Amino acid sequence: MTHRFSRSHGIQIFSAPSDAPRVRWSTDLISAGFTAALLGFLILVAGEKSSFDTNVLQFVGDLPGWVLWLAQAAYIVGVCYGFGLLIGVAFVARGRLKLFRDMVLAALLSITVTVLLTQLIDNRWPELAFFDLNTTRETFPAFFVSTLVAIQAAASAHLTAPMRKIGRTIVLAAVAGSVAGGVTTVSDALGGVLVGLFAAAIISYALGTTAGLPSTNRIGAGLADLGVDATDLHYAGDQPMTSLLLEGTGADGTPLIVGVLGRDSWNSRRWFRLWRAAWYRDQGAQYGSDRRQQYEHDALAMVLATQRGVSVPALIAVGDSTLDDAILVAERLDHTLADVAVE
Image 1 (tube, rainbow, N blue to C red):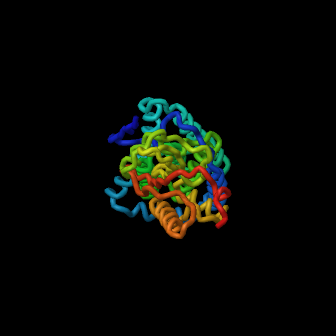
Image 2 (image 1 turned 45 degrees about the vertical axis):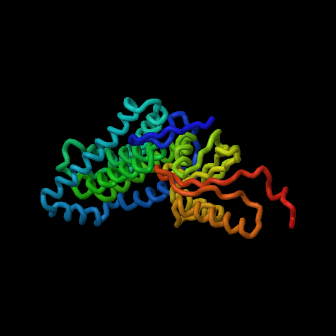
């Protein structure tokens, strides 16, 4: 009997089921080290109260009132979005208590680092800028900016790609608005961004993320988009770092191997592919190519190999699903190159 995979036409917010296994990415640890190094350099600038910050504040003071109002509105919307995301995950989303925990821990870590740095650099407590935006807060780093970035960054790995882009756009607009609206200085805002990214990276590496790997139901629906009817889909035992492999059976009984580069998968990030290319020096995940181009490259190699008599799996289908997952389907071989005759 053929199993029909269901489709979901609603807005997808989360990239993986709530009970999906978690993965610890080395890139999160690298990101934490990189942001910490940048933060250390910025502390030197913030401690000297750079003339650049002063010049920017003078420029902001000369802007029309409506520009300041729009910038401050963007800042307020961003802060409200961050806390709204936190509340939504806690009380609206089902079974996402671990994600809520991650976001809270990232926010608490960012607050702790912010307080320590403010005491170290300015010898006072952080100034909160939310209700009164007419006075520029000049404690390093900006309190609400660091908290907002930490919350969004901690949630990013668990959100679908469109939701990540929306969230990042709101956060970037809020950071820019905090500067253009005279809420804080450039150095303090950048410091807040770095502290938030650092806190989220530490929490993500310590607790892992669901990595956005697509479910078998979603992949089955994607196969149907390509005209492939598959049953008994399950994750393969050995998984590569750059894609997801599944095994299944075609409608005619043909054993199938399915490769998936998920739209929401954390290993599809350009940052991850750049790190892998630099570390392993391979071509497994070319930095300049998108998901579809990578699998088109693999499909072309398989076709050329077949034409020249090489024993490779027969290509069945390649393309994008309606949810923008790149999928390659081939016949699964039950032997390796070691089993093939030399000639």
